Length: 245
Image 1 (spheres, helix red, strand yellow):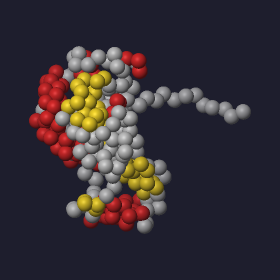
Image 2 (tube, helix red, strand yellow; image 1 turned 90 degrees about the vertical axis):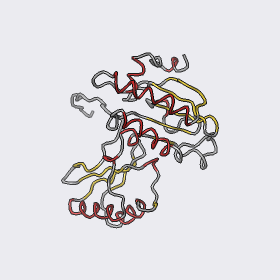
Image 3 (spheres, rainbow, N blue to C red; image 1 turned 30 degrees about the horizontal axis):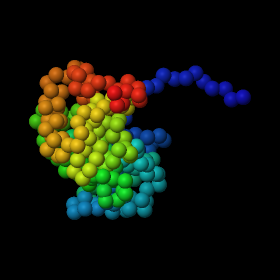
Image 4 (cartoon, rainbow, N blue to C red; image 1 turned 180 degrees about the vertical axis):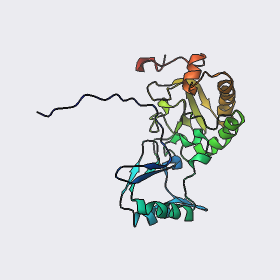
């Protein structure tokens, strides 16, 4: 028989990623990179794919995909840390997560159109443009550093976990989305349908006053999902059978 030690106390305090450099084991380091939409590609001034290809030629550790569509360059030898940083900077792909709003850093989208045959609407290709407009609202209300989980999918199958988003946008037809609100920031409560078949103007019209109210009326440490439940914007989904209630 194998003897087990006593269980140690542990609890999850976040469902998001910690970006940038972090110490690992045995004197090695890890680097978590923000990957918008989970897609590694090159574009003018941002050669992430080329940088990773160059790094892979000498990196002796590993590459890890996170559950939030980001990438960890793991187990980096101490002697390779500066070299990896230099390669990323050369290709314009150095870590920049701290320059982004927390809303954008923690956003998720499925691939949707034009790759997925199940999709009714855009997600990965559209969410960055929507976030440009939401970022303006977020910054105006002093919420740039507050993590609000937004997830978008092109259909109700929910591959980007929209029903666990404090803000969930589920595609119903081209350019139209159902809006869900009120999930727990920690991932232990589903959200609730709030509005149906919104276009972009409708999404902005619904979310703008909610962001303003959250900035002005939240309690200390209160997440956006908890706020909209506490203030009666939506009812809490306490179990799966409550989802459509």
